[in-house]
Every structure is written in C-alpha cells, then in structure tokens.
Amino acid sequence: MNVSEWYRALRGKSVTTADLYLSRLEKFCKDTGFSPNQLLELGDEEIKRLVLDYISDKKGSYANSFYYALRSWLEFSGRTLRIKPAERAGGRREIPTPKRLGEILAVSEPKAKVAISLLAFSGLELHVLGNYDGSGGLKLGDIPELRLNDDDVELSSRPARIVVKREGDGHFTFLNSEGCDYLLAWLRMRMRKGEKLTPDSPLIPSRSGGFLKTKSVSKMIRKAIRAAGYDYSPSSLRQYFIKRMQKAEEAGVVPREYWVFWTGQKGYLTQQYARGELPDDVVLDMRERYRKASKFLVVEGGAKKKIRVKRQKVVTLDELESYLEEGWLFVTLLPNGKVIIET
Image 1 (cartoon, rainbow, N blue to C red):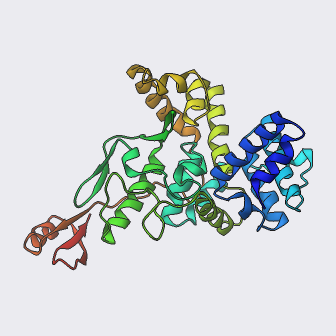
Image 2: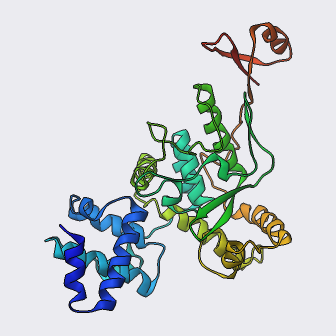
Image 3: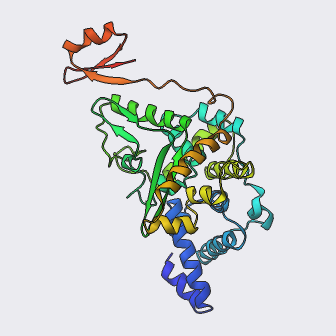
C-alpha cells in the first residue's frame, strides 16, 4: 500500500490530522524498525503487541495519537487494530520486579545482558542501540570512560557515562557497576575471538559487523525475557529504570530533572546540553547522584551476585613463562603465534 495515498485521503478531510498521523507513523516506524508495509505483513496479535510495547512509556493523548495514527494506516490498508482503552492505559504494561529482572539477566547471553542493562540501568530506548534500518546505533566511542587497549579493555571510572547523540540535541546517562561488569565481559569475549575493537565499533554488532536494526534488538531482548519464563515487553525494562528512579526521587536521592534528562525526555537540562551550556559541576553532581541512586536499581536473585570480570592480555611465547609464574593462566594460542592469558 502507498503511504502517500493514505496521507492524501486524510488530508482531504483534515490537514492537521493528516500531518499529525503521518508524523506519528514515521516516528513509530523509525523507532521500531518496521516500515509501514512491513507492518502489514505481521499478524493481528503481533501488531497489537508491538503497538502496546511502543506506547507503554507514553501517556494520555500522546500515546493515543500513535494508536489512532496506526489504526488509520492499517484500516486504510485493509487491516484492523482494536485495543481497548483499558489496555492502552496500561493493562499489559507490567514492569519486572528486581527479583524477576535478576532472573532474566541470569539466563541471558552476554550481548543480551548488555542490551538489557542499558535499558533497565540506564533508561535508554531500544532504537538508541540500533536504529530503524541498522545504519547507526550506540558505538564504543559513546562511552567516554572506556579504554581500548591492544590486549584489554577497561573503564576508567564507574558509573560509566553513555552519550546518546541525536541530530539537533542529545543527552547522556550512566551505567551502574553491574552493567559495567556485563559490558567488559562482553567486549573481552569479542577480543578473545580476534575482533579489533575501535571507538567506531558497534556496541552490539550484527552478524555482518554493522549495527543491529531496532527490531533485532527487540527480538534479542524478548528472547531473553521468554527464556526466564516471563512475558514482559522489551520496553518494560526502560520503565523499570523510570520506576526505580521515581523511588530514588521520593527518597530525596536524585532530583526529577536529572533522571528525566537521563531518559532523554525534553526539559531545560536537555536544552542546556544541546547548546553546550551544561555546567561541569552539574555533570559531576549527576554522576554522584546516579551513583547513590544505583542502590534502587540493584536486582535480586541470579544476577545479584557480583560477577568476576577476568583480565586478559596478549603476550608473546617468550613472555609467557614469567606471566605464568606470576599467577596468570593460559587461555589460547593465537594464529600469529602469540597467546592470550588471563587472571
């Protein structure tokens, strides 16, 4: 079906509605990784779930504007979308408890642990990790404290800052100690496999080495959630962050404007940051406030225990013996004749 024809049909009735619905459809498709026509290939329940997942962190008329825009497009294309007001208001928007989030992390593969952490501990949106068409996403260079060495990767400080770059503006957030452990474990595993990491490397690459599409990020996270036996939506993990930060706010640990900024929502701090006018003392205070608020993000159960992150190095065969005497362990022999060791 042709989006232009749909838009013209709407415009014939109301220019304002046509412009609004078109903008909502475009944003929905960009954020979810589906084109308008790809939506039509999904089953009714798949579409319903996708829409509910998407509007789960939106409120009132803003959430409804996406629903009615998508319903209009689908009906124009011969499909139907009916979601009762109670469902749109939150009937399916359950948020994991700390215990259940711990169980989800415990059964997740390394890269899924990182993705889940960035949503649940940093408040990022799915499309930040990988955009609609896989042409962009979060890079290693977007983590300023990350140090990439020839034989190892380290973080110069914790919590680590995550910079989200967007055209015209942007924001940053932080990643707690548990998330940093998952991050380092994931990157070191990639290095062990021979990957050369650079600031331009995707944080979570596709099989071809590029960025994942948004829908692939969502699928990966949903798989991990299902493996733990739950039916939460991937976007519920970002809601976990928001809910826990609200608790931190109520406890007087973090100001509302800080966590709103970390989630990328519009506000005066976002405007200051876009103009390059966010004071250094505010950035330092944000880091310290996030550090204190991290106790509200702590999960329970399988992932609560601090994981041990192994340190690895690449050394020559001549150096190997001295390192073994110091307590390092042999891991594997590389094709170039060097060896990987760890401690």
